[in-house]
Image 1: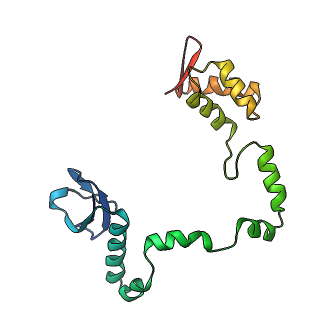
Image 2: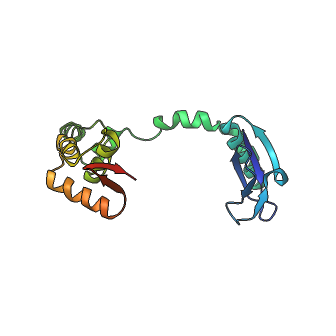
Image 3: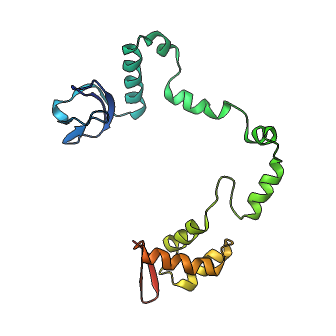
Length: 174
């Protein structure tokens, strides 16, 4: 359940999910019991709660008529990809060959929009492998273009920082 609630101190409006015991105003920090908060609407649909909040804010600022002419958030969100230039048009406008970019992405071994830093690759190995040893992590990272020396240094640094533990040669993310 979602509720549009208001702050009695600063008149801020926000959406709360569920029924917390208390809630704190994101603007002024005033904390109050949920039961005592004024609820403008309660609904099971988050999009509806967002719409009501936006409508109230628009009316407060004297733009209620303009807001009424807008499409719903869900409709605008669905249309967002149709707005603006495509990725190819943008790249061409910036003087970059889109085919060269696609080829570079394929050489990197990822799908479009998916790239990992070397450190993220080491962390992914620790997350995805069952009982990963240093050799397992090195092999995983090597398949993704990360050199062994970097992987070993990264494991040491992560262990010193307390982000991973090593027990019997097996690494675990903390």
